[in-house]
Length: 293
Image (cartoon, rainbow, N blue to C red; front, side, top):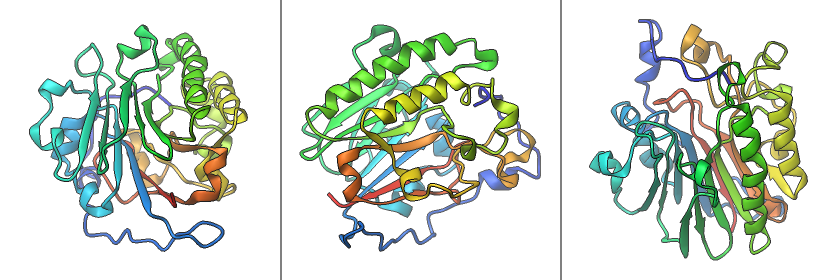
């Protein structure tokens, strides 16, 4: 995707950022193909700055969804500078990793059920210093939430992204050898042309280069599934990110950059993957995964 630009909203755009989703009915009867109703709900959201997200009523997602697990990316906030209302949420165990550079990257995980274990990073100091990955182990699966490196304006950090992809894939494969995984987060790639509004004009822009797309294809070839496209292979205009410029969200000129990726053997337990475009608070919207576990 194009690198983040300074948030400048005109008067016409301002009301969108203040919209609330907490009164919306997010109940669902989704079930597996063999009729087993979901019993696990996960939410993933790139918040583009946790402190700004809080001011936009971002925490209302907990009330709207009543999720079992919430994963946030791009928190841009070290734990010691995190507002108390985000640091501890009633009913949830909370885990954070931040970048060595204040105001950059960062990931958070909130879980009703205490994980068996929680680890941080992928075992590579350069990438781990940027605070990009939390891995939580549960009895039935590993949950990995990640903010994947952006290739940057004019692809200035594409090399870093290309270094990341195989190392991150190894982390996922090592986990998958022990028990199945659920990967969620801003993976910073629109995999196919259907996953962004203007594919022809973005082939050499961050998030849609052939290198990044091939990296995601390689990951899927290792026994993983893009859960949204598994359920909705031809559904168009389904996006999770819109630049603040040009009123793109209102026009739905966006990118699908946020994913739930599953180990193939979890697919029979997949119930639904939902894009919550009605929830505001960031240049991304949250996504929701429903599983029967």
